[in-house]
Length: 303
Image (cartoon, rainbow, N blue to C red; front, top):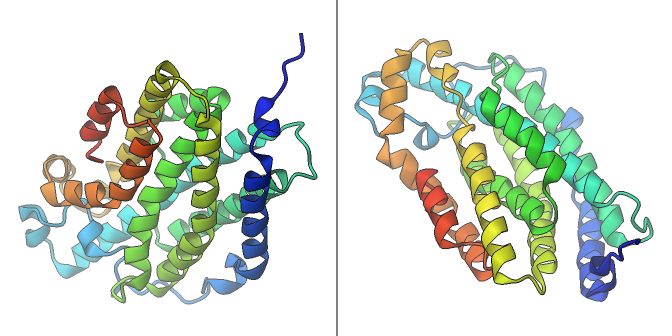
């Protein structure tokens, strides 16, 4: 028996209107990183790669012992690691969205917006890759377990699980990068990259929120419990993969001590929690912030 996609038949006017507004916004305000970012000026080591307050070591005794040069070098490697993690998840995102809209109505504004978002993410991934290289950092990749779980997730996640996980990754990066793009201590080309990403990702977050709410219409308690846990587990691996443990050795630090102090750094944990306050309110309102999922978010320092 051929199944009927009731999602396409329900609540279409509102969903189509949101998609049309996003398409209009994309036409009005989008950037080309090739021309907008200053790729030619050599890296100035007098700048940070990210706001120091977002460093995993900021607020620790080890941070206080570092010279200003070492602090800047560390933040440049951490920024490159966050960019590399962003590429990893953007590739997951693109595949989930493309799979979701496979063989659907191409005249639907939501279909067209989905392709627009995928095009945005392709440009963002190239932008992040060039930015990480300009920071003189190596390719930072998530741990093998995270990579394989991501491979499974992108292949199987559907509906609200896919879109809520997309939202988590985008929300955490959004708050972080809003700080970086305004911070004059951060190297100018990174500030430009962050500004482009913040502007364009705001539309992606709007779409992810709308899709999450749409897919949850009529969902029962068991489904919300299950997908709430799936999203929380995905969030855990996204957030814990942002800063690769190799950044410390590559920045010339004592890696074991740095990892130990970063793991216990209450300041960094507080920054993560504050960046996710709005996200947690949304997940709670959607019925996805369950008792089981809250334990996972607590372990990831998101709540």
